[in-house]
Length: 511
Image (cartoon, rainbow, N blue to C red; front, top):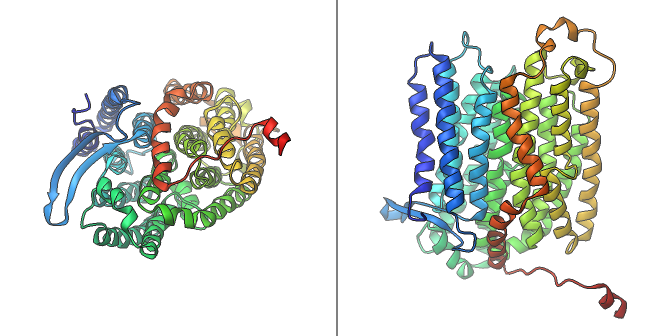
Protein backbone atom coordinates (compact mmCIF):
# COMPACT_ATOMS: atom_id res chain seq x y z
CA UNK A 1 0.00 0.00 0.00
CA UNK A 2 3.06 2.26 -0.05
CA UNK A 3 2.16 3.12 -3.66
CA UNK A 4 -1.21 4.58 -2.65
CA UNK A 5 -1.10 8.42 -2.60
CA UNK A 6 -1.95 8.69 1.09
CA UNK A 7 -0.22 12.00 1.74
CA UNK A 8 -1.56 14.00 -1.18
CA UNK A 9 -5.11 12.79 -0.50
CA UNK A 10 -4.75 13.48 3.24
CA UNK A 11 -3.50 16.97 2.46
CA UNK A 12 -6.26 17.86 -0.01
CA UNK A 13 -9.20 16.28 1.85
CA UNK A 14 -9.51 18.99 4.53
CA UNK A 15 -9.14 21.73 1.91
CA UNK A 16 -12.04 20.31 -0.09
CA UNK A 17 -13.99 19.99 3.18
CA UNK A 18 -13.25 23.62 4.03
CA UNK A 19 -14.66 24.76 0.68
CA UNK A 20 -17.79 22.61 1.13
CA UNK A 21 -18.42 23.90 4.67
CA UNK A 22 -17.79 27.52 3.64
CA UNK A 23 -20.50 27.18 0.97
CA UNK A 24 -23.14 26.12 3.49
CA UNK A 25 -25.57 29.00 4.22
CA UNK A 26 -24.99 30.83 7.48
CA UNK A 27 -28.46 29.87 8.71
CA UNK A 28 -27.58 26.15 8.45
CA UNK A 29 -25.10 26.22 11.34
CA UNK A 30 -25.84 22.68 12.56
CA UNK A 31 -25.30 21.27 9.09
CA UNK A 32 -21.93 23.02 8.85
CA UNK A 33 -20.84 21.49 12.15
CA UNK A 34 -21.91 17.99 11.14
CA UNK A 35 -20.18 18.18 7.75
CA UNK A 36 -16.96 19.49 9.32
CA UNK A 37 -16.99 16.72 11.94
CA UNK A 38 -17.71 14.02 9.37
CA UNK A 39 -14.95 15.31 7.09
CA UNK A 40 -12.39 15.30 9.91
CA UNK A 41 -13.40 11.73 10.81
CA UNK A 42 -12.74 10.63 7.22
CA UNK A 43 -9.24 12.12 7.52
CA UNK A 44 -8.79 10.19 10.79
CA UNK A 45 -9.82 6.89 9.21
CA UNK A 46 -7.47 7.37 6.27
CA UNK A 47 -4.65 8.28 8.69
CA UNK A 48 -5.22 5.06 10.63
CA UNK A 49 -5.02 3.06 7.40
CA UNK A 50 -1.75 4.85 6.53
CA UNK A 51 -0.38 4.10 10.01
CA UNK A 52 -1.13 0.40 9.51
CA UNK A 53 0.51 0.47 6.07
CA UNK A 54 3.72 2.08 7.39
CA UNK A 55 6.54 -0.48 7.53
CA UNK A 56 8.54 -0.02 10.74
CA UNK A 57 11.60 -1.81 9.37
CA UNK A 58 11.27 -0.36 5.88
CA UNK A 59 12.70 2.72 4.19
CA UNK A 60 13.25 5.83 6.27
CA UNK A 61 10.86 7.87 4.10
CA UNK A 62 7.72 6.12 2.90
CA UNK A 63 4.58 7.04 0.92
CA UNK A 64 6.75 9.21 -1.32
CA UNK A 65 4.96 11.13 -4.09
CA UNK A 66 6.42 13.72 -6.42
CA UNK A 67 4.67 15.85 -9.04
CA UNK A 68 5.99 18.60 -11.29
CA UNK A 69 5.45 22.15 -10.07
CA UNK A 70 8.08 24.79 -11.02
CA UNK A 71 10.64 23.01 -13.28
CA UNK A 72 12.96 26.01 -13.61
CA UNK A 73 13.52 25.98 -9.82
CA UNK A 74 13.34 22.20 -9.48
CA UNK A 75 10.49 22.76 -7.04
CA UNK A 76 8.03 19.87 -6.90
CA UNK A 77 4.96 18.74 -5.01
CA UNK A 78 6.92 16.10 -3.13
CA UNK A 79 5.45 14.34 -0.11
CA UNK A 80 7.03 11.70 2.13
CA UNK A 81 6.80 10.64 5.75
CA UNK A 82 9.31 9.17 8.17
CA UNK A 83 8.40 8.02 11.67
CA UNK A 84 8.62 11.54 13.08
CA UNK A 85 6.25 12.99 10.50
CA UNK A 86 3.92 10.00 10.76
CA UNK A 87 3.25 10.39 14.49
CA UNK A 88 2.63 14.11 14.02
CA UNK A 89 0.18 13.44 11.18
CA UNK A 90 -1.60 10.95 13.42
CA UNK A 91 -1.77 13.54 16.21
CA UNK A 92 -3.38 16.01 13.81
CA UNK A 93 -5.91 13.43 12.66
CA UNK A 94 -6.87 12.60 16.25
CA UNK A 95 -7.08 16.15 17.60
CA UNK A 96 -9.11 17.84 14.87
CA UNK A 97 -12.40 15.91 15.21
CA UNK A 98 -12.11 16.25 18.99
CA UNK A 99 -11.59 20.00 18.73
CA UNK A 100 -14.43 20.38 16.22
CA UNK A 101 -16.79 18.60 18.62
CA UNK A 102 -15.44 20.61 21.56
CA UNK A 103 -16.08 23.84 19.63
CA UNK A 104 -19.72 22.96 18.95
CA UNK A 105 -21.06 25.94 20.91
CA UNK A 106 -18.06 28.26 20.78
CA UNK A 107 -19.49 30.54 18.08
CA UNK A 108 -22.47 32.80 18.70
CA UNK A 109 -24.56 32.33 15.56
CA UNK A 110 -26.17 35.75 15.95
CA UNK A 111 -22.81 37.53 15.80
CA UNK A 112 -20.48 35.31 13.77
CA UNK A 113 -20.75 32.87 10.87
CA UNK A 114 -20.61 29.29 12.17
CA UNK A 115 -19.80 27.77 8.74
CA UNK A 116 -16.88 30.19 8.37
CA UNK A 117 -15.40 29.15 11.71
CA UNK A 118 -15.53 25.43 10.97
CA UNK A 119 -14.31 25.99 7.42
CA UNK A 120 -11.29 27.79 8.88
CA UNK A 121 -10.63 24.83 11.19
CA UNK A 122 -10.59 22.46 8.20
CA UNK A 123 -8.40 24.87 6.23
CA UNK A 124 -6.01 24.90 9.16
CA UNK A 125 -5.95 21.08 9.14
CA UNK A 126 -5.05 21.21 5.43
CA UNK A 127 -2.03 23.42 6.13
CA UNK A 128 -0.94 21.34 9.13
CA UNK A 129 -0.95 18.07 7.21
CA UNK A 130 0.85 19.72 4.32
CA UNK A 131 3.67 21.15 6.42
CA UNK A 132 4.44 17.79 8.05
CA UNK A 133 4.08 15.78 4.84
CA UNK A 134 6.18 18.01 2.57
CA UNK A 135 9.53 16.62 1.40
CA UNK A 136 10.40 19.57 -0.82
CA UNK A 137 11.81 22.50 1.13
CA UNK A 138 10.09 25.15 -0.97
CA UNK A 139 6.77 23.33 -0.56
CA UNK A 140 7.43 23.13 3.18
CA UNK A 141 8.07 26.87 3.25
CA UNK A 142 4.82 27.59 1.41
CA UNK A 143 2.81 25.55 3.92
CA UNK A 144 4.83 27.08 6.77
CA UNK A 145 3.62 30.52 5.70
CA UNK A 146 0.02 29.85 4.64
CA UNK A 147 -0.79 28.04 7.89
CA UNK A 148 -0.74 31.50 9.51
CA UNK A 149 -3.78 32.63 7.54
CA UNK A 150 -6.57 30.43 8.93
CA UNK A 151 -5.28 30.76 12.50
CA UNK A 152 -4.99 34.54 12.12
CA UNK A 153 -8.67 34.77 11.15
CA UNK A 154 -9.73 32.29 13.84
CA UNK A 155 -8.06 34.38 16.54
CA UNK A 156 -8.89 37.79 15.08
CA UNK A 157 -12.56 37.09 14.28
CA UNK A 158 -13.63 34.52 16.88
CA UNK A 159 -11.32 35.14 19.84
CA UNK A 160 -11.67 37.01 23.12
CA UNK A 161 -11.56 40.74 23.97
CA UNK A 162 -7.89 41.18 22.93
CA UNK A 163 -8.27 39.09 19.79
CA UNK A 164 -7.14 41.71 17.27
CA UNK A 165 -3.98 42.58 19.16
CA UNK A 166 -3.17 38.90 19.70
CA UNK A 167 -3.86 38.00 16.07
CA UNK A 168 -1.66 40.76 14.69
CA UNK A 169 1.16 39.95 17.13
CA UNK A 170 0.95 36.27 16.25
CA UNK A 171 1.01 37.04 12.53
CA UNK A 172 3.90 39.53 12.69
CA UNK A 173 6.12 37.28 14.82
CA UNK A 174 5.51 34.32 12.52
CA UNK A 175 5.95 36.45 9.41
CA UNK A 176 9.32 37.74 10.60
CA UNK A 177 10.42 34.18 11.29
CA UNK A 178 9.24 33.22 7.82
CA UNK A 179 11.40 35.94 6.26
CA UNK A 180 14.48 34.50 7.98
CA UNK A 181 13.54 31.10 6.59
CA UNK A 182 12.94 32.46 3.09
CA UNK A 183 16.45 33.92 3.02
CA UNK A 184 17.86 30.60 4.21
CA UNK A 185 15.78 28.63 1.67
CA UNK A 186 17.09 30.77 -1.18
CA UNK A 187 20.65 30.47 0.09
CA UNK A 188 20.31 26.70 0.43
CA UNK A 189 19.01 26.44 -3.16
CA UNK A 190 22.03 28.39 -4.41
CA UNK A 191 24.71 26.39 -2.56
CA UNK A 192 22.87 23.04 -2.63
CA UNK A 193 22.83 22.44 -6.36
CA UNK A 194 19.76 24.42 -7.42
CA UNK A 195 17.29 21.95 -5.95
CA UNK A 196 14.70 21.96 -3.18
CA UNK A 197 14.42 18.18 -2.85
CA UNK A 198 15.21 17.17 0.73
CA UNK A 199 17.07 13.97 -0.20
CA UNK A 200 19.29 15.75 -2.73
CA UNK A 201 20.06 18.56 -0.29
CA UNK A 202 20.86 16.11 2.51
CA UNK A 203 23.28 14.30 0.20
CA UNK A 204 24.99 17.62 -0.60
CA UNK A 205 25.13 18.80 3.03
CA UNK A 206 28.79 17.88 3.49
CA UNK A 207 29.91 20.03 0.55
CA UNK A 208 28.48 23.31 1.90
CA UNK A 209 31.05 25.75 3.24
CA UNK A 210 31.17 25.72 7.06
CA UNK A 211 30.49 29.42 7.59
CA UNK A 212 27.72 29.40 4.99
CA UNK A 213 26.12 26.37 6.65
CA UNK A 214 26.11 28.12 10.01
CA UNK A 215 24.36 31.18 8.62
CA UNK A 216 21.80 29.01 6.84
CA UNK A 217 21.24 26.99 10.01
CA UNK A 218 20.65 30.22 11.92
CA UNK A 219 18.05 31.38 9.39
CA UNK A 220 16.08 28.16 9.74
CA UNK A 221 16.58 27.98 13.51
CA UNK A 222 15.26 31.48 14.20
CA UNK A 223 12.11 30.74 12.19
CA UNK A 224 11.58 27.45 14.02
CA UNK A 225 12.42 28.93 17.44
CA UNK A 226 9.76 31.61 16.94
CA UNK A 227 7.22 29.01 15.86
CA UNK A 228 7.93 26.60 18.73
CA UNK A 229 8.35 29.02 20.61
CA UNK A 230 11.65 28.94 22.46
CA UNK A 231 12.82 31.63 24.86
CA UNK A 232 13.24 34.56 24.07
CA UNK A 233 10.96 34.29 21.00
CA UNK A 234 7.95 33.21 23.06
CA UNK A 235 6.04 36.38 23.88
CA UNK A 236 3.41 35.98 21.15
CA UNK A 237 2.12 32.65 22.52
CA UNK A 238 0.50 33.75 25.81
CA UNK A 239 -1.38 36.50 23.95
CA UNK A 240 -2.49 34.21 21.12
CA UNK A 241 -3.34 31.31 23.42
CA UNK A 242 -5.21 33.60 25.79
CA UNK A 243 -7.26 35.27 23.06
CA UNK A 244 -8.01 32.25 20.84
CA UNK A 245 -11.14 30.13 21.34
CA UNK A 246 -10.28 27.17 23.59
CA UNK A 247 -10.42 24.60 20.79
CA UNK A 248 -8.29 26.70 18.47
CA UNK A 249 -5.82 27.29 21.33
CA UNK A 250 -5.58 23.52 21.78
CA UNK A 251 -4.61 23.23 18.11
CA UNK A 252 -2.28 26.23 18.26
CA UNK A 253 -0.27 24.80 21.15
CA UNK A 254 -0.95 21.11 20.58
CA UNK A 255 -0.10 20.95 16.86
CA UNK A 256 1.00 24.19 15.22
CA UNK A 257 3.84 24.93 17.62
CA UNK A 258 5.27 21.47 16.92
CA UNK A 259 6.17 22.67 13.43
CA UNK A 260 9.10 24.49 15.05
CA UNK A 261 10.60 21.48 16.80
CA UNK A 262 9.76 19.22 13.85
CA UNK A 263 11.55 21.64 11.52
CA UNK A 264 14.68 21.54 13.67
CA UNK A 265 14.71 17.74 13.59
CA UNK A 266 13.79 17.40 9.91
CA UNK A 267 15.78 20.25 8.36
CA UNK A 268 18.31 21.90 10.68
CA UNK A 269 20.02 18.75 11.94
CA UNK A 270 20.33 16.67 8.74
CA UNK A 271 21.10 19.57 6.37
CA UNK A 272 23.57 21.39 8.64
CA UNK A 273 25.19 18.73 10.86
CA UNK A 274 28.33 20.67 11.80
CA UNK A 275 26.37 23.87 12.41
CA UNK A 276 23.91 21.92 14.59
CA UNK A 277 26.74 20.71 16.79
CA UNK A 278 28.28 24.20 16.87
CA UNK A 279 25.03 25.90 17.93
CA UNK A 280 23.97 23.13 20.35
CA UNK A 281 25.39 24.74 23.55
CA UNK A 282 23.50 27.98 22.89
CA UNK A 283 20.29 26.09 22.07
CA UNK A 284 20.59 24.08 25.29
CA UNK A 285 21.00 27.26 27.33
CA UNK A 286 17.93 28.83 25.74
CA UNK A 287 15.91 25.65 26.33
CA UNK A 288 16.83 25.45 30.01
CA UNK A 289 16.14 29.16 30.56
CA UNK A 290 12.76 28.67 28.90
CA UNK A 291 11.85 25.82 31.26
CA UNK A 292 12.55 27.81 34.42
CA UNK A 293 11.45 31.23 33.18
CA UNK A 294 8.10 30.09 31.76
CA UNK A 295 7.38 28.00 34.84
CA UNK A 296 7.95 30.99 37.12
CA UNK A 297 5.68 33.17 35.00
CA UNK A 298 2.99 30.46 34.97
CA UNK A 299 2.91 30.46 38.77
CA UNK A 300 1.89 34.11 38.81
CA UNK A 301 -0.84 34.00 36.16
CA UNK A 302 -4.46 34.82 36.98
CA UNK A 303 -5.70 34.09 33.45
CA UNK A 304 -6.30 30.36 32.96
CA UNK A 305 -5.56 30.27 29.23
CA UNK A 306 -2.41 32.36 29.55
CA UNK A 307 -1.28 30.06 32.36
CA UNK A 308 -1.65 27.00 30.14
CA UNK A 309 0.22 28.83 27.36
CA UNK A 310 3.16 29.49 29.68
CA UNK A 311 3.24 25.84 30.73
CA UNK A 312 3.63 24.93 27.07
CA UNK A 313 6.65 27.21 26.70
CA UNK A 314 8.26 25.32 29.59
CA UNK A 315 7.41 22.00 27.93
CA UNK A 316 9.03 23.11 24.68
CA UNK A 317 12.18 23.72 26.68
CA UNK A 318 12.22 20.00 27.54
CA UNK A 319 11.73 19.13 23.88
CA UNK A 320 14.63 21.43 22.99
CA UNK A 321 17.13 19.89 25.40
CA UNK A 322 16.16 16.43 24.17
CA UNK A 323 16.84 17.42 20.57
CA UNK A 324 20.19 19.10 21.20
CA UNK A 325 21.46 16.45 23.60
CA UNK A 326 22.11 14.44 20.42
CA UNK A 327 21.29 11.06 21.96
CA UNK A 328 18.79 8.53 20.71
CA UNK A 329 16.98 8.52 24.06
CA UNK A 330 16.78 12.31 24.13
CA UNK A 331 15.64 12.55 20.51
CA UNK A 332 13.03 9.82 20.89
CA UNK A 333 11.84 11.44 24.11
CA UNK A 334 11.52 14.80 22.34
CA UNK A 335 9.40 13.42 19.51
CA UNK A 336 7.30 11.43 21.96
CA UNK A 337 6.96 14.61 24.04
CA UNK A 338 5.66 16.44 20.96
CA UNK A 339 2.86 13.90 20.63
CA UNK A 340 2.07 13.53 24.32
CA UNK A 341 2.18 17.26 24.93
CA UNK A 342 -0.34 17.70 22.14
CA UNK A 343 -2.68 15.23 23.85
CA UNK A 344 -2.23 16.50 27.42
CA UNK A 345 -2.19 20.22 26.72
CA UNK A 346 -4.99 19.80 24.19
CA UNK A 347 -7.08 18.20 26.92
CA UNK A 348 -6.11 20.90 29.42
CA UNK A 349 -7.03 23.73 27.05
CA UNK A 350 -10.34 22.10 26.13
CA UNK A 351 -11.34 21.54 29.78
CA UNK A 352 -10.27 25.06 30.73
CA UNK A 353 -12.47 26.24 27.85
CA UNK A 354 -15.41 24.36 29.36
CA UNK A 355 -14.89 26.17 32.68
CA UNK A 356 -14.48 29.54 30.97
CA UNK A 357 -17.64 29.03 28.89
CA UNK A 358 -19.65 28.26 32.02
CA UNK A 359 -18.28 31.11 34.13
CA UNK A 360 -17.91 33.66 31.36
CA UNK A 361 -14.43 34.56 32.62
CA UNK A 362 -10.83 33.41 32.14
CA UNK A 363 -9.71 34.62 35.57
CA UNK A 364 -8.74 32.15 38.27
CA UNK A 365 -9.97 34.62 40.90
CA UNK A 366 -13.51 34.36 39.49
CA UNK A 367 -13.67 30.68 40.41
CA UNK A 368 -12.83 29.06 43.75
CA UNK A 369 -14.56 25.93 45.02
CA UNK A 370 -16.02 25.21 41.58
CA UNK A 371 -15.57 21.50 42.20
CA UNK A 372 -18.53 21.63 44.59
CA UNK A 373 -20.79 22.60 41.68
CA UNK A 374 -19.23 20.64 38.79
CA UNK A 375 -17.40 17.73 40.47
CA UNK A 376 -16.94 15.54 37.39
CA UNK A 377 -15.62 18.40 35.27
CA UNK A 378 -13.32 19.38 38.14
CA UNK A 379 -12.04 15.80 38.21
CA UNK A 380 -11.23 15.94 34.49
CA UNK A 381 -9.37 19.22 35.03
CA UNK A 382 -7.42 17.57 37.85
CA UNK A 383 -6.47 14.67 35.58
CA UNK A 384 -5.47 17.03 32.75
CA UNK A 385 -3.32 19.00 35.18
CA UNK A 386 -1.58 15.87 36.46
CA UNK A 387 -0.89 14.75 32.89
CA UNK A 388 0.54 18.19 32.11
CA UNK A 389 2.97 17.97 35.01
CA UNK A 390 3.99 14.47 33.79
CA UNK A 391 2.66 12.32 36.61
CA UNK A 392 3.91 8.71 36.35
CA UNK A 393 1.28 6.64 34.60
CA UNK A 394 0.45 9.40 32.13
CA UNK A 395 1.94 9.66 28.65
CA UNK A 396 4.02 12.84 29.21
CA UNK A 397 5.96 11.11 32.02
CA UNK A 398 7.57 8.65 29.60
CA UNK A 399 8.58 11.50 27.30
CA UNK A 400 10.03 13.63 30.07
CA UNK A 401 11.89 10.66 31.56
CA UNK A 402 13.49 9.79 28.21
CA UNK A 403 14.49 13.41 27.61
CA UNK A 404 16.13 13.75 31.03
CA UNK A 405 17.88 10.37 30.85
CA UNK A 406 19.13 11.09 27.33
CA UNK A 407 20.37 14.53 28.39
CA UNK A 408 21.90 13.44 31.70
CA UNK A 409 24.26 10.98 29.98
CA UNK A 410 25.96 13.84 28.10
CA UNK A 411 24.99 17.10 29.83
CA UNK A 412 24.41 16.50 33.54
CA UNK A 413 24.16 20.19 34.45
CA UNK A 414 21.40 20.93 31.95
CA UNK A 415 19.47 17.84 33.02
CA UNK A 416 19.68 18.76 36.72
CA UNK A 417 18.53 22.34 36.10
CA UNK A 418 15.70 21.11 33.88
CA UNK A 419 14.59 18.77 36.65
CA UNK A 420 13.86 21.84 38.77
CA UNK A 421 11.24 22.69 36.16
CA UNK A 422 9.35 19.53 37.17
CA UNK A 423 9.07 20.85 40.73
CA UNK A 424 7.83 24.22 39.47
CA UNK A 425 5.33 22.42 37.21
CA UNK A 426 3.81 20.76 40.25
CA UNK A 427 3.55 24.18 41.88
CA UNK A 428 1.77 26.02 39.07
CA UNK A 429 -0.54 23.16 38.10
CA UNK A 430 -1.63 22.19 41.60
CA UNK A 431 -2.00 25.82 42.66
CA UNK A 432 -4.20 26.49 39.63
CA UNK A 433 -6.41 23.50 40.46
CA UNK A 434 -6.58 24.45 44.14
CA UNK A 435 -7.58 28.05 43.39
CA UNK A 436 -10.09 27.03 40.72
CA UNK A 437 -11.91 23.95 42.00
CA UNK A 438 -10.99 23.55 45.68
CA UNK A 439 -11.41 25.56 48.87
CA UNK A 440 -14.27 27.82 49.85
CA UNK A 441 -17.00 28.23 47.25
CA UNK A 442 -16.90 31.62 45.54
CA UNK A 443 -20.26 33.19 46.49
CA UNK A 444 -20.81 34.47 42.94
CA UNK A 445 -20.68 31.01 41.35
CA UNK A 446 -24.18 29.86 42.42
CA UNK A 447 -25.60 32.96 40.74
CA UNK A 448 -24.23 31.81 37.35
CA UNK A 449 -26.80 29.42 35.82
CA UNK A 450 -24.27 27.61 33.60
CA UNK A 451 -22.13 26.69 36.63
CA UNK A 452 -24.94 24.42 37.84
CA UNK A 453 -24.43 22.16 34.80
CA UNK A 454 -21.78 19.47 35.19
CA UNK A 455 -20.08 17.78 32.26
CA UNK A 456 -22.49 16.99 29.41
CA UNK A 457 -22.64 13.94 27.16
CA UNK A 458 -20.99 15.82 24.30
CA UNK A 459 -18.18 16.97 26.59
CA UNK A 460 -17.68 13.41 27.83
CA UNK A 461 -17.30 12.24 24.22
CA UNK A 462 -14.74 15.03 23.70
CA UNK A 463 -12.50 14.28 26.70
CA UNK A 464 -12.82 10.46 26.82
CA UNK A 465 -10.52 9.68 23.82
CA UNK A 466 -7.81 12.02 25.11
CA UNK A 467 -7.95 10.56 28.64
CA UNK A 468 -7.82 7.04 27.22
CA UNK A 469 -4.81 7.81 24.99
CA UNK A 470 -2.94 9.58 27.78
CA UNK A 471 -3.35 6.58 30.08
CA UNK A 472 -2.69 3.97 27.38
CA UNK A 473 0.48 5.63 26.12
CA UNK A 474 1.55 6.23 29.71
CA UNK A 475 1.76 2.49 30.28
CA UNK A 476 2.43 1.24 26.74
CA UNK A 477 4.22 3.73 24.46
CA UNK A 478 5.71 0.99 22.26
CA UNK A 479 3.46 1.61 19.22
CA UNK A 480 4.89 5.12 19.03
CA UNK A 481 8.50 4.42 19.99
CA UNK A 482 8.78 1.62 17.42
CA UNK A 483 7.90 4.14 14.71
CA UNK A 484 9.93 7.04 16.12
CA UNK A 485 13.20 5.26 17.00
CA UNK A 486 14.44 4.43 13.46
CA UNK A 487 13.83 8.01 12.26
CA UNK A 488 15.63 9.48 15.28
CA UNK A 489 18.58 7.10 14.85
CA UNK A 490 18.85 8.09 11.19
CA UNK A 491 18.79 11.77 12.18
CA UNK A 492 21.57 11.25 14.73
CA UNK A 493 23.63 9.54 12.02
CA UNK A 494 23.07 12.55 9.77
CA UNK A 495 24.41 14.81 12.51
CA UNK A 496 27.42 12.50 12.95
CA UNK A 497 26.96 11.72 16.63
CA UNK A 498 26.72 8.48 18.56
CA UNK A 499 25.19 7.58 21.87
CA UNK A 500 27.71 7.52 24.75
CA UNK A 501 29.01 4.06 25.63
CA UNK A 502 27.36 2.80 28.84
CA UNK A 503 29.65 2.33 31.82
CA UNK A 504 28.73 -0.63 34.03
CA UNK A 505 29.25 -0.67 37.78
CA UNK A 506 32.34 -2.95 37.90
CA UNK A 507 34.08 -0.75 35.32
CA UNK A 508 33.57 2.26 37.58
CA UNK A 509 35.11 0.36 40.48
CA UNK A 510 38.11 -0.65 38.37
CA UNK A 511 38.66 2.98 37.45
